[in-house]
Length: 284
Image (cartoon, rainbow, N blue to C red; front, side, top):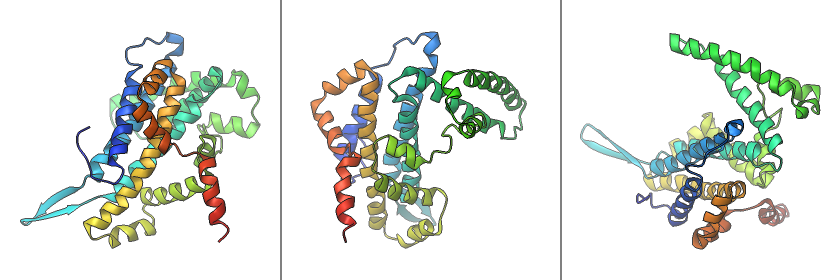
């Protein structure tokens, strides 16, 4: 954690990443009964999210290349934004699937999420024997998983449209990322603004290309990169409290780190915290 990209909120981001590791490691080595093996994907998603955030820091620190004896330094702010979108979506999946009061609801959502991922891989065109074998094996898993989903009590409470979407791999059943964000406590206007902006860079919109082209000076590139770390701090803070709410040991670790907890509380912006800002902004 010693490296630094020098952005405005660097000390807070460092503290949040260190807290993140502390909370997740609080669960390390604990055995999970075989019937609850699916819950291990909480850790898998936690690792995925952490790596996105850490990679943002690495990319945001800047790069350089040498061409014909000339050193060219730059900060790839576009890639920082692509990583930020991935991190944000990962947190929303984590919250939607696992931050549920009833374990059986979480299990059902996990099954539908898993089915969607396996069906995505069935749409690929394998070119190796090993890949073809894996795809065939997963086809059997899909058949079994569909049976389990269809026999679940929650499945019977859904509309035909929702059931069809789930069996087709659409685990969000038509819900947009915006809906998942509001469910996770983000302000709808804030999320829409930041998410649409991030998607522009992921999908190479003209606006994103224009901004890359206009940011010729490294200081401007740094400025555009730094703006994303406030979002990263917010996501890391939300994750800390969400993760701690799922595990007693993680909650104890959070409570025993009052300094880091205070930083996380500062960055855990909620919808109600931003509501006044957007209401006042709308008066203009």
